[in-house]
Amino acid sequence: MTTPQTNKRFPQMPDFWAGITDDSTQTERDAANQALDAWLRTDAGREFLAADKLVAETANTRDITWREAMEACGYE
Image (cartoon, rainbow, N blue to C red):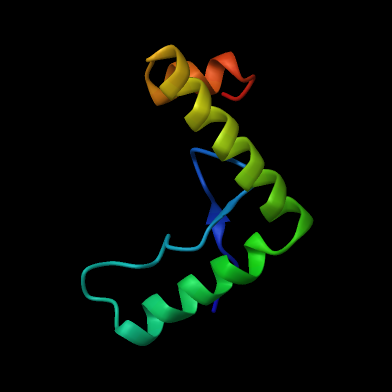
């Protein structure tokens, strides 16, 4: 598997699905998911999950869009 590209929504998270298309095999999809699962167990992955949770809670609590919540939480 090649090095993942950067995820546009959260730049610190690699985009494990960048090369996945409708024509991708199940093996390719499984490999991308396994790479994501492994990354989520790292410090950066846990930090991402905490940020994602904060943005989601902010969006729900304030009844604002995801983009507005990201900005309110200090993310671009």
